[in-house]
Image (cartoon, rainbow, N blue to C red; front, side):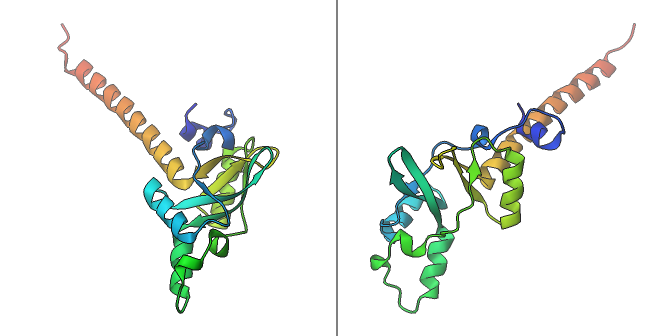
Length: 168
């Protein structure tokens, strides 16, 4: 199903957070070094990591750390001793989650109301299953718009060619 159609049409089949989310999630733990987290973001080309705690059944998200969190923390310190800081010292602890079966549109509304760009997706046991990012959403919609534009272009060419044929 088209994400664009699902987000703009009443009564269509609901797209859930679990269906849309990226199942590849880069994680860190609170005790990990801040330098290590920054290097991981650089190496993976991501702007955030989900902070998790390990539990018997999987990984439970307990926070997020972003490249902005690190920068703001470092610039806000008089003499930062970055080598002594852990992820837990800097991470955002107030975590907004999306539930796997929750309608994607509800998640997007919540992201907008909180002014956040990334939300971990959890299952019924509050275990991490994925991540929804605003960037992924924009990319998906852009791809669908490109495909739609290609269809319209083909239709326009077909109509133009049909009119150019002499009737006889």
